[in-house]
Image (cartoon, rainbow, N blue to C red; front, side, top):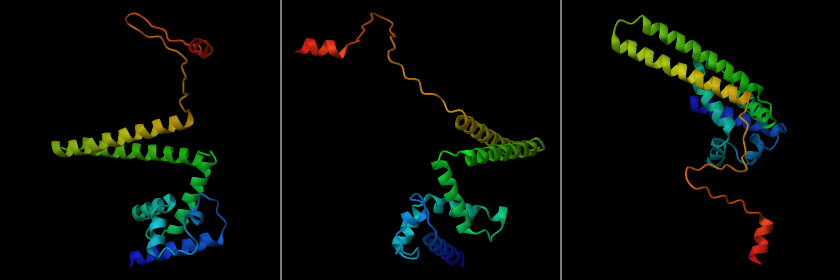
Length: 183
């Protein structure tokens, strides 16, 4: 039953995509208009579209968040909009997502650490504390990614660096002088 619903949603999505005009990075350009998602070729092409992959994963995990009736095609459309925003250089959606993830991970850490502190059994304490510290580490990584996104590291190009511990040989060859010596 669930497979039939997903197939129907993908078919509806494909039909919607044909009706509206989407730029070259979106669904229509990546799926031949003659190929329906029900054919093996169509399914294969759909399986490689990032927004379809992301939407299907979100659908399978979001049941306990939004309920079982969330629309797959709407999720895919929102993901496509996010992809287009990032392509245009607008990273505000990603920044918001990272802030929310960092806060969610902090909440997970706090909850697990509190559970760990109330355990009397060492194995349960270690299990909860291990999970809490993993959540804390992921929160730190998420915050680090957000900082890198907001303040990218500048690349430094060094023309020459003379570092040696023994006799130093400098190979600063001028190309014009080299051509004169070769001729």
